[in-house]
Length: 267
Image 1 (cartoon, helix red, strand yellow):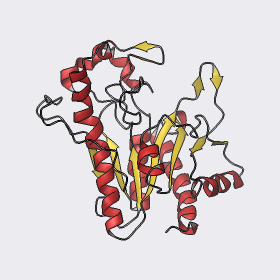
Image 2 (spheres, rainbow, N blue to C red):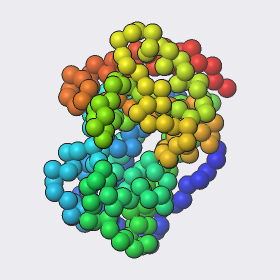
Image 3 (spheres, rainbow, N blue to C red):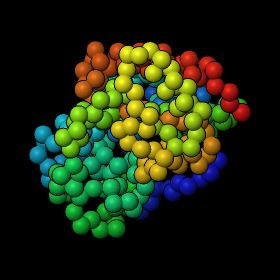
């Protein structure tokens, strides 16, 4: 397995206060399935030491802070597929787990025109503290779970769950769900065909974002570079911003992805 990972800095001061949860939560660890579900932007939590990053608390209900609906959706998909899932415990505004460290959007000073005072002019030590506490533990855990799957003689299958806003810069996005992929189309092509065949959904092929020149870290590093089948699903957040919608889309995704996984031939 390609190993681009870095161990947490043992001398970095702790980002967490007593009683705060760790960087990630793992579900269904004993699953025999090769499928791993990950949710990079599951939570809008901020460590107490960072004092809400200087933001009004209302900001943490917006998409800039987390992927609305995705935590519940990932939990339900983990149950339906009997698959292991990994949920990030802290907001993308603290550090974005789906951006390469050092990228300008990794710890954004501005997100969707919202200035983030607590991210301004961070020192190298402050950046390393966030990477050490949140970024590397999460991605190292993904690697460990994949290693566990490989150890059973299976090929890991990675599925990343995200949501997107219905309107972006005045454009009403028509897609119900987007399937994002780069070079590996083993899962994306049959899933797109299956969803489109129903005639019920507006399905985006690399929409609302384009994955062929990805800025994303999770699929690029854990999927593409390791040669494991993978895809990223984007669900429009107004469709999963309530429990009924979560249940409906968990059922839709399970129905179609289960059929694809049953047909795909893996080494």
